[in-house]
Length: 278
Image 1: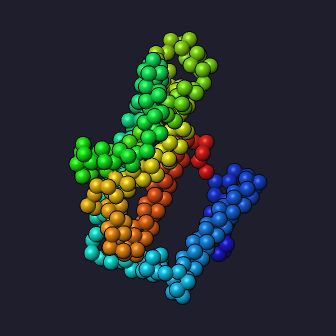
Image 2: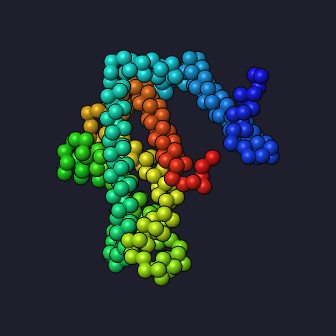
Image 3: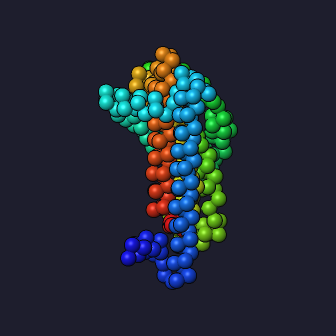
């Protein structure tokens, strides 16, 4: 009786006994992977705490998990945690959305008008290779030390990556399918919407996964340069007052946010790319 629910969960969705065995082994392996992942994390945190407690490492420089947890609670209790996290997440999502949507639109325009893509190609390549941190002071002068400058930096990092990768995917659309739909009198818009764009969906999803991290990087760099709120601001503030617990707490929160955003995009992938569903 006690084992029935577990067994039912492990074989849920099976269409045959052989399929049930495969699902059982697959889900047991996934469970083992999760257990080992948590064990590795717990071991790392435990060794870090012990090394700091026994003064093998200097906790003033490296901080320690207990101090990070205490600082987290302090930030949560005084309300600054939620405020700064909200600022960083908002800036990241806006930069991600604008950079991705604009990049896909420009890539579509390049596919539609190949003369424009030939003219713009060297400029897009050079702008993509330009270190975006160098643009930070430019955006600050243009837009002021405001949230707009931070968002602009996040957009600049994700925009050109999107253009290059998505345009390449558009150009790789199956030419035979394009010939077939053209022979039936399909307009250029119908060719794009029925053949070109759907074929590029896996690449677009992969680009989303890259862009969410790039947008977060752009946001944090922007907050380093021009912000009075956000996790990047807390890191710089903690550095200036030699409070490594504040710095490490902000870094830990950033890793959690990055992971949550990445898995959110993965969830979108599972709904938009049918052959990648579990």
